[in-house]
Amino acid sequence: MNAPRRGVLHNEHVLLGARFSEDDEVETPHVTSYANEVTPGEGLEGALLADLTGCAYLLVSGTSAEAFGRAMLAGRNLAVGDASFEAVLTGDGSVCSVPLALRTGDTELVLLDPTARGAALEGWARFLASVSQGDGAPLAGVEVEDAGDMLVPLLLAGAAAETVLADYVGSPADLPVPGRVSSLHLDAIPAVVARLPRVGATAPAFLVLVPPTSARILWRSLLSFREVSPVGSEAVRALTEGLPWGSLLLGEGPARATSEELAGWGLLRAGEGYVGARGLAGRG
Image (cartoon, rainbow, N blue to C red; front, side):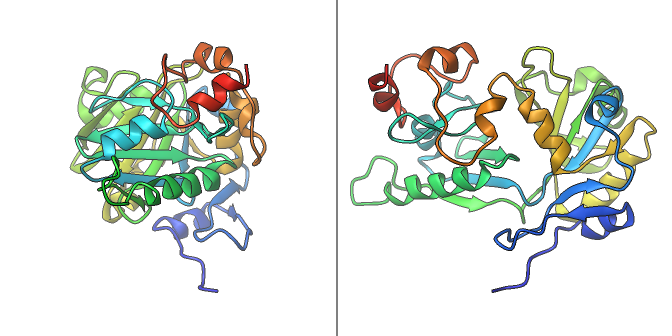
């Protein structure tokens, strides 16, 4: 077995007293928690900062990326610049994953799932891409890649998240609104910044994708704000469990939800056209 890869911020986490995952199946160990870590509730009064390296983080690209996204994601059809939580269903209508989906370009789609369902998301996406490559297949021309070596994913969430990021760009008006993604410069650092959709009473949250060469600089800069506290995957998963559909994300096996529940959470569009639609309707 190959030695596990270390994320570009590994040494930064060690300096902060990080505890890392010990799962032999994980290719890139992730931070589970830090010494003296704040609780999510306390941290959200300021801003929580998490390095999501090691979670399921995929780039779907190619001429059929848009069509692939419509088929794989059961929620609304994404336009370029949209950021949305989306249900991914298996053929029988079971919930495989509820990733954050970013439409970053005409031929690009980013999927990110920091929960225990990330491995299932990656496996299902790769399977769907593989069966789409035959002669005359409608989704031929799409590639699913691990995006971990492309841009480093950082999550900044909490009441102070907007104020902290606005310090880099000039004003809050220069940041994307909820449910949108933009290419920005955080001071001199190029970044792709998505503001997560507001779901109920959840705190403001941003996903910041930054080049590996600049990740250490931005990580240290963000932690220089007294409002910002680093957290690991355990805290991030606690946040996801607080989402309306959080109970679906706890296990790794098939999760069941009705079409009414999924639609009520904003995870299901009307009609068919996505994988699992007929299976979901057939379950009643």
